[in-house]
Image (cartoon, rainbow, N blue to C red; front, side, top):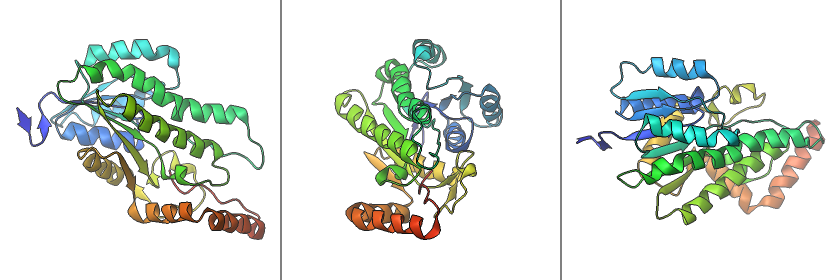
Amino acid sequence: MTNGNIVTGSTVWITGAGSGIGKSLALFYAAQGYHVVISGRTVNKLLEVSASATALPGKISCLPFDVSDSESVPAISEALQAIVPHLDLVILNAGTCEYIKKQNLDPALFRRVMDTNFFGLVNSINAALPLLKAAQHRPHLAGICSLAAFIGFPRAEAYGASKAAASYLLHSVRTDFSDVMDVTVVNPGFVTTPMTAANDFPMPFEMDADQAAGRIANALHKRPLEYNFPGRLTAGLRLAQLFKGMWYRKISKQRRDNGTVQRTPAG
């Protein structure tokens, strides 16, 4: 049986689903009739998301999970298998951002960001693989990366590097697991979330989490290799990639002229 393009019994696991894009995606898929499993570090936030979906045709189950905790992966995988028999879609959305201060490349800061944004993907994929392999139809894995990884920005060394590493990881996973699943890399620009709320600089083409979730869900339905949005910001950064020398000279001049640091362009 189907509901539009949704197969009855379809399941999705979303990490980082207590707020922002993850929360909006969870409510979107529950409204489409999916059984949605949501994960995050804060139990109360997960319960609030679940409670807000009681009138929706789908179901939301909560599974607390700190994606940076590699030792918990076997237990999380078992817990997933106790909730759903398989996974048709996995959206790895958990992420964090910290900017470096002045010229200090603090190793502890880099480890914190990489533990969530990169190793969190590794841990989540390992937890999900048994259930992805159990899907009756070809499953789909998507990772939320960032346009910030397209080119270097001052103070974004840790964040941008973690998202670039995450993107490379997902592209490589696609090659090694092409017999198991499809993989999509999602690179959003600025989205209004608790993470970007701390940004103290202009965020061009910013959109709210519901708008971003709608775009992502619509793109994932087509299973592209990569989805970058919004288009105008993507185009600008692609142009910067083509003319890296001009890009970096411009930023260096801005820093000298203003005595300030240009921040990252994407959430």
